[in-house]
Length: 102
Image 1 (cartoon, rainbow, N blue to C red):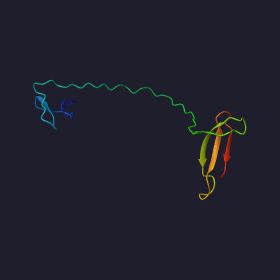
Image 2 (cartoon, rainbow, N blue to C red):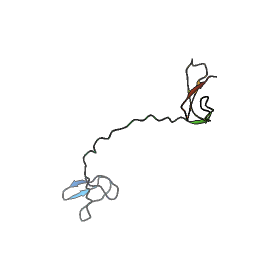
Image 3 (cartoon, helix red, strand yellow):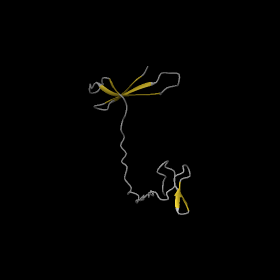
Image 4 (tube, one colour):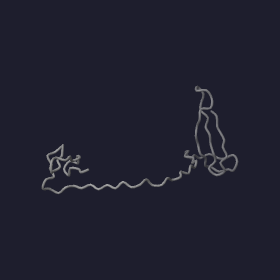
């Protein structure tokens, strides 16, 4: 498949020359663009290793178990919709989890 050097459209064959359907480019007497694209075999399949990673924000919160001052933070609606959501904390050091109600 050849492409027009002026506008990039696909050239089509007209008698002994190639012509562009968009612009008036013709390949007769000019340098012909030759495209050479190799299609290689599919790479072998790779094994995907799933690892759970926590991407929660880290806040300042004192752990009741080890005394560390940093914890992951997230919220969840654990009660009815008209009540406040529950805040959960997880220590970045010992992974102790606690919650806070409002």
